[in-house]
Length: 485
Image (cartoon, rainbow, N blue to C red):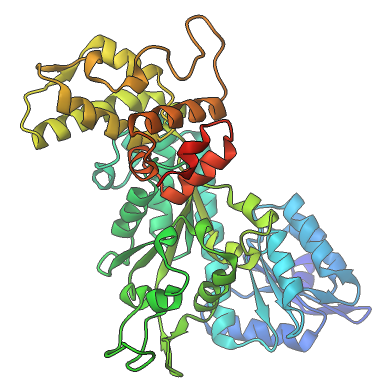
C-alpha cells in the first residue's frame, strides 16, 4: 500500500482536527467538529450495512474533498467553529449541485435548518441523533441522488419507445416528445416513495398522471385517495382529513376515518394544494413529519403510512415567496417534481387527442362519426386551448352532440372556434398574449352560459373559485358576470 493510501486510510489529526478517508470508494462524507460524534455516526452507518463514510472535523476542508472525491452525500453540521454551515451549503450547491446534503442542527435551531433546505439541503436531523432516523435519512438521500441522476439522463431526449411500461400511459394520448419526458419521469419517480408535486395548468391531466404513478408504484395494491383542496370545508377540515372518534362532537355517533387513514398503505392525492388556507397547512405538515395523526376527540396517536402526491396549477415557489404557502410544507412535498406542459406547447397532441375523444363520445352517443374533416382539424390545431386537454374534450363532446354526418365538421364545433381565432385579434393581425386569449375565451364561455359562472367553470374545466380569481384578474370583463352564481 502506498504512503498516500496509508494516509487516506488512517484517521489523522492536524491541529486537533480529524480526517478519515476510506481506501475503498465511499459516497458519504460526514462533517462535524466533534470527533466522538463522527466515530459514532460511522459505527451506526456501518452496522446498518451502509458504506464506511469519510469523516472530517474541519469545515474548511469540505470543498477540497468534494473536488477530490465523487461523494453523493454530505452530512453537515450547521454549527462549526471554523466555518458557517449555511455558507458551506450554499457554496457546495453552487459548485456541486448534484451532491445531496443532510444538515444537522441543535434542538433550538430548527429555523436555521429550514433555511438550509431553502438553499438545497435534502432534509435536516436534530441532535441528539436517533439511530433509526439517521439511517433512514441517509438511505433516502442516497436513493434520491441516484433517482435525480436517472432523471438528468433524460435531458438527452427520451422516446416513447424507451418506456418500461408504455401500457400504463395508454389513457394519456400523446405523440409530442415533451410528454415522453413526463412519462419517463413518472416511471422513475413511481419506483420510489418520495412525496411528489405535479404542476401544470388546469386541464393538462395532473390527476390522471398521479393515478398512473400510483399504479406503477409499489403502493399499487393500496388505495389511491384523491382529495380536492378547494372542496374541503374550513369547519370540517380536520374531520375530513383526520377523522373523529365516537362522541367527539354532537352527532358523532360512531368513529370515522379521515382521508389520511383511508389512504393508509397507498397514495393520498392532494389536488390544487395551493387552495388550502395557510392557517390549515400546518396540520398537514405535522402528519407528514411525524407520520401520525390524532382523530378529533382522541388523545391517541394513530400511525399513518401514505405517499403524498400534490398538484397545483400555480407557481408553487411564487406562492411561497408571497407568503401564501408555507415554506416548510413546500420542502416536505416538493421532494420530486413533474411539470406537464400546456397543450398549446405540444400541438402534435391536439389531433390524436381530438380523434380519441371523438371515438369515445361518438360511441357514448351511439353516433357513427368516424373522423374529422380538414377544416375542423385546422381550427382545432390553430386554437390556443386555455383549458388544455379538458377543454378539448369538452369541445369535441359538444360537437358530437350536434353533428349529424359521418365526419365531424367545422360547423359542429362551438362558436369559440369559429370566426376570429382567439389566438389572433383578426385576420392578419399579430398573435395575442396568453392573458388576452384567456380573457376572450372566458368571455365567450360566459356569454354562451348566459353569465352562469357555475356552468362556465364546468365547461372551462376549473373550479368556481379559480374562475373567480381569473375574473378578478380581468376587471374589464363585464361586472354583471363576476357577480352571478
